Image 1 (cartoon, rainbow, N blue to C red):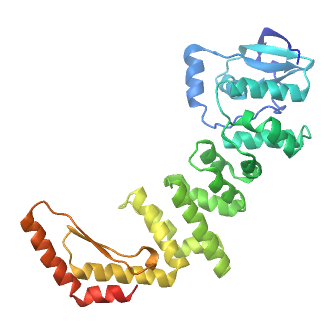
Image 2 (image 1 turned 30 degrees about the vertical axis):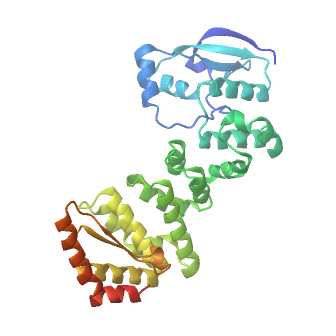
Length: 322
């Protein structure tokens, strides 16, 4: 690829604002970039392609937006000439991959551009561009990444900021915009980790399929609005309430058993130094007591308390539930 270029001083009006072929960066927060440009100026010049009547931005759309927003009309740019569109895309990728990895939303935008604009097939993209775009991507992840274009903007932002991983993002992309908006409302104030977000999506899917019920009705039944507006509990407690409530809707019998065991545990009146460990998910019949003590006398008192607990009717009923 032979490059013909020169550094020029341009004006905002020299740029074609409607040609966004290379507007492939996805990081909505321009504040740090704006602060840098106002403080030290434009460190990296824009790269543009001269197309006779106007110039098209190849690299620097975010910088261009900041310049325009702050009415900085004159700026330096590296002006390319006589390049094909695919060559320009290669230049864009080379410049950006030199100092960063593209996030998953950017990867999705780039792959779609390669398919729709330049007619590249999936096998060619995977073989020649996958690792170039993001070293962590695998061929198996490629089709999932393409689906991310179906996400609403609020969820795309979560993916770009790595708050939502690829697996969960792919699951969200299968939902219609209405359902995505409901999930986005939950994620707006609550930071679900990867496993808990997976659990949330799975419960909603399974309940909806079983009961043939819309997600909005499920969340109303859960009392989501009341949970989110409760100022007396913190974010983690709200997340647990949401997941526990959905678990109860998904497995009503299992949830009743959990509530019964919880009530019987309380009735045992075990001291905090004794912990009763029951089989996980009511699977099995192996029970365990854990004792924490510092002195022999304390140990003897705990053993006496444990003996009373084992002989109680409450403990017998706990055993019967498993």
